[in-house]
Amino acid sequence: MSAQDVLVLAEIQRETLAEVSLELLAAARGLAAATGGEVLALVLSPDGARYAPSLGAADRIVLVDDPQLAAYSPEPFLAALQEVVAAEKPRAVLIGATSIGWDLGPLLSARLGAPLVTGCKAVQPDGDALRVTTSFCGGKMMAEVQVKASPAVLVVLPGSFRPDGQAGKAVVQQRKPASPLAAGAVVFDGWVLPEAGDVDITQQDVLVAVGRGLQQKDNLELAEELAGALGGVVCASRPVVDQGWLPATRQVGKSGMTVKPKLYLAVGISGAPEHQEGMKGADLIIAVNTDPKAPIFDIAQFGAEMDALELLPALTEAVKAKRG
Amino acid sequence: MKIAVVVRQVPDLIEPLEIDASGAALDLSSASFIVNESDDHALEQAILLKEAGGATVDVVALDFGDVDNTLYTAAAKGADRIFKVPLEGLPPPPRATAALLAEAIKPLAADLVLVGVQAHDELDGGVSPFLAAALGLPYVGVIRGVKAGPEPGMVTVCKEFPGAVMARMKVKLPAVLGILGADQPPRYVSVSRIRAAMKSTQFEERAVPTPPPEPLLSVCRLYPPVSGSRAEMLAGSEADVAARIAEILAEKGLVK
Image 1: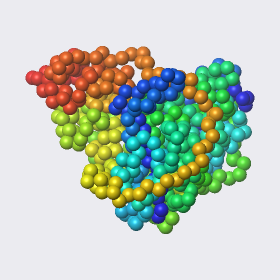
Image 2 (image 1 turned 180 degrees about the vertical axis):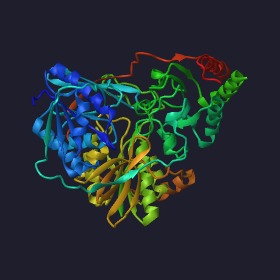
Image 3 (image 1 turned 135 degrees about the horizontal axis):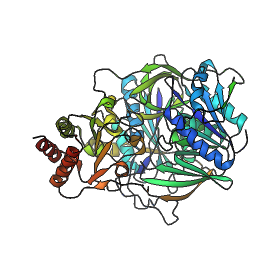
């Protein structure tokens, strides 16, 4: 590998290749084309070969096999990643902004004393440096950051690049850690799946989504009435679930569900990147928010700058009147 | 169990964000600050562990902005000791903030350090894994819920994944956890309890050397997001907007 190469951490979530891995490959392809380097996809799994056919956009695929990599825990995964980065010396390491990436990106950066940029949405060469565009403050501010040192550890927001899942002729290399990986202080102990019984919001045509603008739990009733009039159900952004007003099965976004309804009516939701990740595939997005600069208006087809609590009763009545 | 909790202040995103004259930093001179949401959950989780099993809770915060009110609130919620780290100016970037906090936390000999997994004003976050590295402790983040056990010197956590799925993980202590959400929402405390805490709580100061500046990256410019498309904004009264939305939905066959 050369000092201009780009390493992508292909992430396995519950025995499935995470979509963001293909987005990272697209980002890496663009960067490597500009630097003249190669793209390396790294799979940390005892069963890595099964994911290689999906990683054809890479020039080379490295499969690291060790029993400690059967399920995610930070220390063995970090040790394996660090070893490969030390051996390959890439210009940049691309990691998804996921539950695993939020651990490994900063931890790798700390171990290597390497620069870290989170919330990345674009990256390009800038002379000998990299210029990284990143989103922060809940998507309300962007920054252009110059990174000179190598390797740059870039934690990339899912949805920032079009996935590149092409079949290719990537060279596949098997690799064993220099010494068997040790279990760390944090050990995987099983999956906890959502309780059955609640509605499946991923199967709904109409979703009325509520956010922080709901202000208090009692106001859920206003959203429920509108959802009822539209034949849909109520879902929420993370702060509402954090408050315990709705169960986690109703949460939309990075750490919740990904939904693609015919209608997504977002009331009192600012639209942070983590939320957009779970709903921007909706056919029709209508947003209501008091902040005219709320990022949700960037992806909505229609918007209204007003207090959602004022609008909800009027909208319920208007929908009922239309139904006749 | 000895628990240390980090509590940070972040700009309130309800207020408009301003960029300073350099074009490369936020102008926070007139910003209002609030407690970082995931830190508030970290504090709640610590108090819940204390209530469940008799832990002690130490809160550590960088001293700037309106942190005193946040810390009195923490005391009213049940924190045992409050430590403030003196600071000149605004908090440094996450890696340096973590170095400052680590120096203040080391003498506490905590079994468990709880920190919010992210703060929205971080470009190169987050503080929690960097703090773990600075303390030389194991780390796992994006945690929603912590229970003591199943063995002494251990906690069991739920790490959040997409689809409302959690990974249950056992963590040998000492360790640092990046908290996304507590087992229950942060509790409300009355103004009278906060006032009582103001009278009874003594902050302890932990002066630590300021780390050198970080040469690893430089911010070239900040700018508000520029969207390729923007929603068609509907104007008028609530009734006007409601009627227009109902019309749009009917046109698209979504009102039946």
